[in-house]
Length: 190
Image (tube, rainbow, N blue to C red):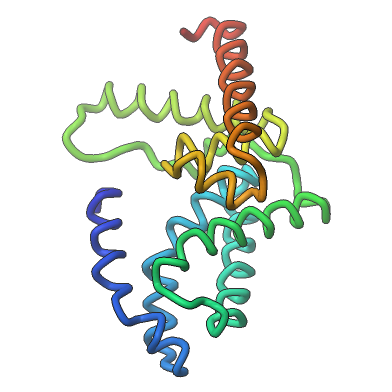
């Protein structure tokens, strides 16, 4: 299923789910997990650099969601709340000494679909390089870049999630891009 299909499914599935989950409907809470699990795990993976650490962070995020259901006033508030909590859980994990990021080559699945084997291999290679490069960025720059460029949030949304100004977020993203370009240039990638 494509990202767009998942997003559409997420929008259609979440209607009324928050209210049912707040009322104690376990199936509704499970629906929330099903809808947002990929978003949370992918974001945590890009921030922590290890899939097993990202899965642990995801469990913590959904535990916090369960504990905070009553605080969420609308279903539109879930997505930004989850990003904010995911970022905070990942920051806490790094402070507690979660292992350094790895290349992620063992866990990255190459793209499938309409592309041929050569294109799929090239895309997988670019993705592995990008994940290694992201792991080398300082946390604040990596977080801003992941949320803005990979997760597709607006600069305003990223600033709200990071409790920062839009100017600071734009600066962090600009610095991160410059560092990525330098890494690519040093490795002969343009």
